[in-house]
Each structure stands twice: as structure tokens, then as C-alpha cells.
Image (cartoon, rainbow, N blue to C red; front, side, top):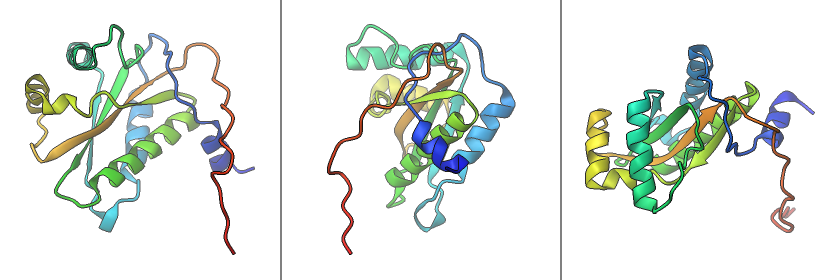
Length: 173
């Protein structure tokens, strides 16, 4: 099998990270891969905010925990968080952002790092505190947060694939 297919089949959601920051080179490569995702009419409606600043990360984590009424970090202790926003004035903004997030996850896997799609931020930036964080990050009001990714070096064993559902593929000739 070729390298791309192996990466796709290997990718897993990682929920345990080493307490070690990824390199700038790795981060830049991963974000560049995200920027090459397909987008409707090549509008490239997405924006990536990579956060490694602990104060800002904790502010986002705390707000997510309050919003979701949970007691542990939804980012699993990852040293890097990538927030993905997209211009809601572009008709394909959600699909564009999700495609970019998948590119980021595949690039992360190919570099031997781990990532996990984090949904809890979607509603965060619609709250009063979330709006303040969004302003601090200098994100325009017409940009919606589609999701986030936790990112870092994998701690522990790489997870095995769960069995695939049956009857999800149909070929009609």
C-alpha cells in the first residue's frame, strides 16, 4: 500500500500527550498542509489559530469546561491547540474548514504526532466570554469556530483501529 493510504488508515484520535512542545517546523508544516485543503470555489474560507501560550490555552479550556459542565480538560493536556474558524459569509465555510482539519490530522499522523478533533469550542465563541477571547485573537465577527484540534507528541501506545461498521459502502454499477 502507498504511504498516503497507510497514513489515512493509521490516523486515530489521540487523547494522551507528552508534556513536550512540538517544533516550529512541525507546526508550520502541519498548518501549511491544512491550508492546501480543498475549498468551495477556492475561497479558502478557513483561518487557523495555533495556540501554545499557556495563559490563553487555559482561558479557552476553562471556558469550555464551564460551558460543557465537565471537570477535565477537553484538550487532553495537549501542548498545542489549533482553533479553526471559517468565514460564515462563504456558502461552503463548514465543509472547507472540516476538509482543512482532516488535512491537518493526516499531516500530524504522517509526522508521527497525534491530534484529536475537539468539538466543545463550537459554541464557546458565541458566549460573552468566548466573544472576548475571539476579539483577543483578532478574529472577525463573521468567522465562526468550526472546531479545534489538540496536537502533540503521543504518550503511550498508539490506539488500534476500532472495527468498521458494516453496510456503509455501496457500489452501484
